[in-house]
Image (tube, rainbow, N blue to C red; front, top):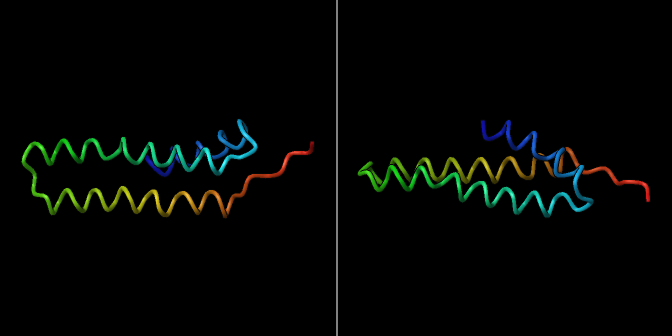
Length: 81
């Protein structure tokens, strides 16, 4: 679901602004931080910290891999001015 959402968001961001990679970076950071909320909740509910750490690592891995793939493999086209 996260990769699908990120894949849809990249063309939308590039349509809205000429500096899409910067906005997309901030959106990726915000979504990653919000995505950690369920991990914090289950840790608070008493789940093992090692298991929650794996979930946190998976969220960060998703962000670290998805952002460069979309920004560098599918770069924003330059608009004619």
